[in-house]
Image (cartoon, rainbow, N blue to C red; front, side, top):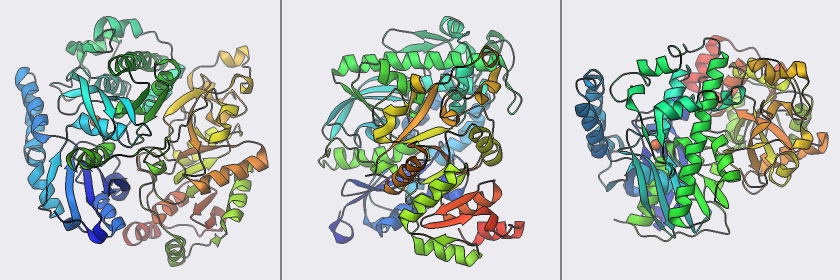
Length: 613
Ligand SMILES: [Fe+2]
């Protein structure tokens, strides 16, 4: 196989056909591009072949498919089919109904992945497959800042494995223990997500955010009936309570009976029962994570831990692992869900199959802040704004930071679109909506007027790395917003008896610290630490805000409206700006004020969608 242009060697990784399709490209082993298909297709969690993400990766390197040394896929399709077939045969006739529904799809799209991949890519070079949890483990360890580390992957299910413990050393790793289908922490959590009326595979975050409102009243019932948890973190689930083996729903009639009724209908009001259930499953999830981590520590004898798999997005659990677990340091892959499998398989091919060395540079991870998606320079942005006739001002960066910091200090809400898009589910200051965390009104304002969503979750703070311990009971890096820690005691506001007696979501409106917009009802916060090396513009903005207000913290929420993927292009950002009550928009060096924009007609929107993306 000959190297690509300029003697560079390229490996492309792909994840697809389950949820969250993505592509990632390595050049000489360095991650040079990675993105989820949903950002381009505008279909949230898009599971199709990641056509546009692949095109983006290849274009960003200036290469074609013929220049790829290998293509990797994050899943072994035949192993997965074997699991599905055995599962359905094993429980026939109960599973017959949904096998008929699942069967043709698998036959068409999944067994013949090799043929399909080659056809989609027009590629006839080597295609290599990793196992699903191998890809997660690779994405956890290989880009981590550790020379050697324990690895823990936990998700719903891949082929057979639902969780794995591994040991990474140098350029390779081995998986030493696995937990197998149908005993799955991810699916247990998803079953509750479904039961609580949220969308499986994306609403798990809401369950975690709802948990602090509840009491752990159902923990005993979960341990007694649902899960037989052992000391080492492995467990058996009582399948009587679940329906994901054979049915079309996650939970069975016995589950409904145990927890006192049918699943909550989506979009109906939340009651205390849902809050208590959310708290209960969160408590159990954290306990399983802690036990698994202790086992990983024991069997590897190593002091650092890498995490991936969908459950690694449970940042409350991660925070507890950090505080109470046996590891000195923890690193979590920012694209911990299945999108990250694309990166994992590419790195696995580079280091294991092509036997290339791995170098860890001064304890720094290889993700480059996970800013691995498309960027648009100021000329492109100005070209776009001129074309649509949008009034704007282009400022030098220093001026821009000062202007935007001033707007934020005046409690304005600003869309911030700058540099390369984030890879992974969180917005980290490249495609973010920003606000003042000290404003008691900010939370309600951003939820209702901008995000159009349920207001029970507080927003997340972005904080200057060197200031994190001034505000929070934590002093480690959390660059990917995957750790939750308490707000410092001395910043908390005492709550009166009347306020204490408030119910549910009303409680969130009571300021609990001098940073009310980012403080949850249990005083926790989901923290992103910002370093100047990885995102200088965002860092400088927060520093400018600190000079004005004394606070080196901003509210950071993803740049999208409810139900839509995070914006990708300037046109996506402008459309979102005009559809919501954002006060200002930053596109690169350009600043736009809402009150100066011409009202957008639906025909303009159509043009934005179809001509300018
Ligand atoms: Fe997974």
